[in-house]
Image 1 (cartoon, rainbow, N blue to C red):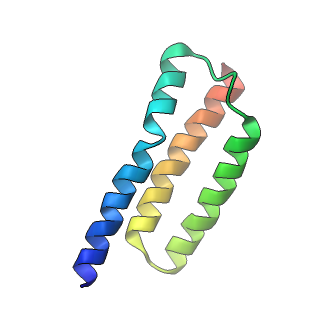
Image 2: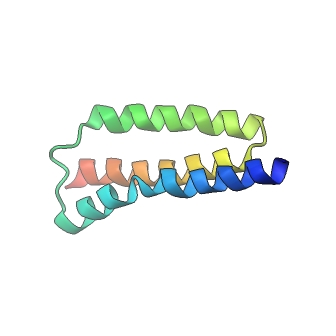
Image 3: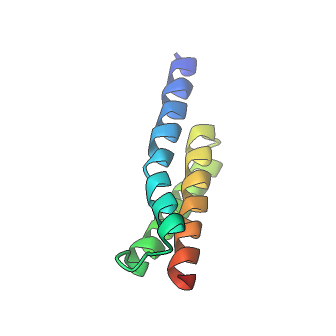
Length: 84
């Protein structure tokens, strides 16, 4: 049963992380992030940080991986927001 839970978690990692890829790609290509709220990005980074710590303390590999990916994509968006 545990293997099924880990498989489901990894599918969640992939699908959850994919939600940010189109936005990051769009911002990169257009060099435009004017409509993105800096507060949304900062709140998202706080949220992802909390979930990352939660995953690390629980040794939950899918949660750790998902939040590391989303954090990297969110940091890219923050960088774009501050530089474009």
